[in-house]
Image (cartoon, rainbow, N blue to C red; front, side, top):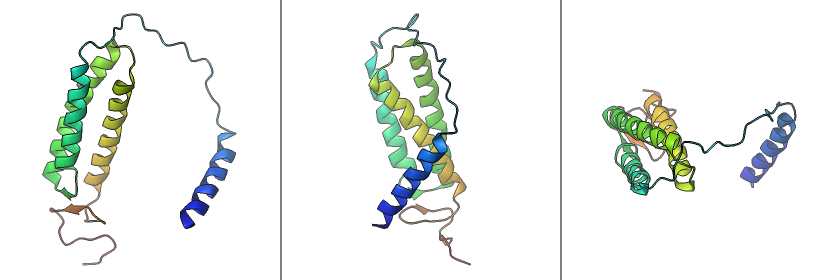
Amino acid sequence: MEALVFAHRAAKESAKEIQGIPFNEEIPEWNVEGTSHPEEMVLITQNYKELQQIMSNYVGIMRSDLRLQRALTRLEIIYRETEELYKKSTLSRKLCELRNLINVGYLTIIMAQNLHESRGLHYTIDYPHKKAGAEF
């Protein structure tokens, strides 16, 4: 019930705030010139699978500074490859999903790197005795 009340209040406040935000309505139509359908769909699916494995193996429940740095390094490679493919391909749902997942993965890794404590389900082996809200 508390979540519903909070969500309702947040939605009302957001609706009020959005009224004052100017929108750019002069956005040009999508230009597909110079792009092609990604015949190499395997590039998208492979990066998607790699991203899933990286997040599961390095950024899952058990974390360390080393694992998070490796995840970030590998994610940057996938990001560069995906952006290169994005620039020369027509849009597809899978390609857009992959780009969004890369962004979420990046944010998750950066936040995990900044959190020097074990919190909730996530445990970091570099800070085993530091728990959220605990004084040591």
